[in-house]
Amino acid sequence: MSEALKNHPKIAAVDFDGTIVKLVEHPHLRLDFDLKPNAKEVLLWMKQHFFLILWTCRTDQVLRNAVNFLNKHGLTFDTVNENAPFLDFNTSGKIYADCYIDDKSISGTIDWLKVKEELIEKFLKSVDCEKVVQEVIIEVVQ
Image (cartoon, rainbow, N blue to C red; front, side):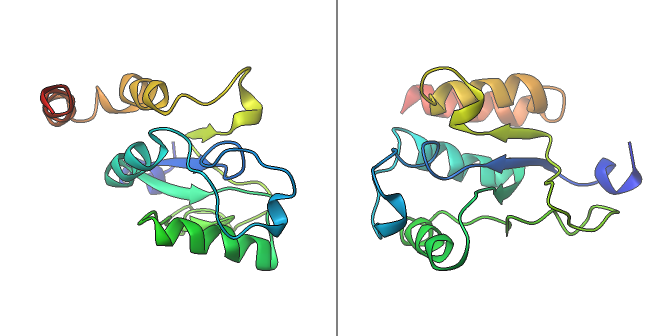
């Protein structure tokens, strides 16, 4: 593993259409979308633990529409369709991430609570077990 990756957070690349928001006909014509259940809460949690990349095929105005929608809902990403700046290689057409969250990579639909469980299991248990356990306890109590 390169030195650049050892001292930085894990990187998560997250798709927009069908992953963060529900799929709709003619999404390029939309300015407003329906968030998937639990997407906002899990993405806000992920922002605390991961370097987040919005990873989408959208470009130009349709991309700006998606970013504006996310910002309106308090969801910000560290980069959009670009690699993390702390990587020791330049951005290319391929985004580097430790995990990719995309509705096209699973059969069925994205379950954001399951995504969170898997992220904790795979990436965070060994990093800061006590902090993650406390977060889970707080969620269960609420």
